[in-house]
Image (cartoon, rainbow, N blue to C red; front, side, top):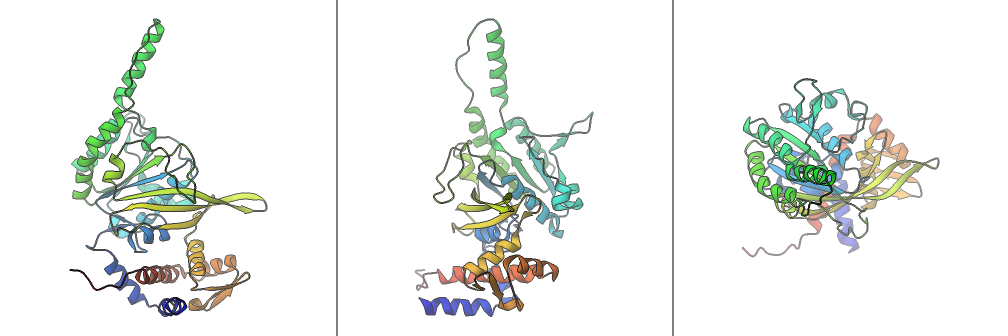
Length: 366
């Protein structure tokens, strides 16, 4: 076992840029346009590539409790996409159904990203952004983009906040009946899930034709246990899971403190469905309130945990970078010397070498 691990570490430490690119190209078959998830480690968990995790022409479902970083991850995805030339003509549509996004997008992600993110539509008179109230609204907005052959990356935040026209009619009927002392029986609570099942097949076909991407965010009523990831209730029936290329559950693994004040959270992401590689993986990354997802910190932690970098007490020996120091000092040095790309390449190669070590290495059956 020790010889195997030692051999694996030698392969990782002697990595080259060429080997990383070759491994990534072989990791996904057939080749796809990859869309960044917003986290380097989550990219790898979803696709085995550091460059992106979601495939164009697909739909993914991101599920978690209200404090697990779903919206921040979606906005980070937009920020990463905005940097890539291949997506310069894409609409980056954020459908804030909950009307609850209060992040300072320009401060966290820059002016260009803030400018690129758009609402599904604008009010004709006021020019104010308009978001979906009903499942029918969502169908109409995304249907228009597909009909106009305009490529997009669309985030629905969240499916749970949508109602349906039937539910609205039922509510009005109940209010009217109560005014005159009557009661109305029955419920249209299932209409939204039924309608979703009917429209998702059409939407996914359209998304595929124009190489677009749909991310549907779902809420849970209770926090997900980061150890067991026991599934909680999620509306939408079986349609979301059936049509999703990726299903990802987020949970808060712990709080990050400084001077006894909470400044962020550690998020654990568990991929429970993966039609890209078939592999179900878990990753963890820190998120800070005034910074966002800390890819550098997450990658440093992975390299330490996998034994690529040795840590003695508080000092980390980053041999490939000719650096050593505490975690915070190492992170700042990597930022200052603009070595993020080299770090992500090392992490990508480490991930793929570990995946390679997990193979059965059997003679093919066919």
